[in-house]
Amino acid sequence: MRTDKIKPSQGYVLLDVLLAVFLLSLGFAVLYGLTEGAVYEARQAADLIEGANLAQEKMERLAVHSWRENITSQACIPGGTMEGHEGKFRWLIHSQWEEIPKLLRVSVEVRWIERGSPYQFKLESLYAVE
Image (cartoon, rainbow, N blue to C red):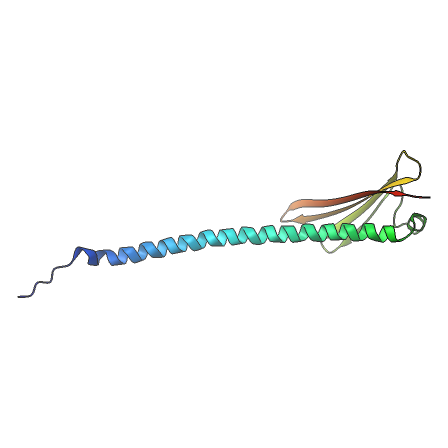
């Protein structure tokens, strides 16, 4: 005599598989969210480094020449602002005479917009002008 009784554990296999698939997909969704955030932060850090490098490059270009040459060629105008664009970056060079004679305060500011938010990096130095 054969009896085909269903064992109670046989009915739970499909439920176990569905629960495992749900938990796995939930884990992947969280992992995707973390990855997307990490990629955004890495892009933001790369833009900051690129902006800082641009500011440093502009400051070094000014420091290579004598300040009289910079002022004559209008690369730097005391009391004024020079500006330009490189890619998505906008740079401004401000310079002004300090109260101490023959000292010129030069600042290079780099600005950009990322995902609708404005960012900036500013580099400033004092130079002796004879």
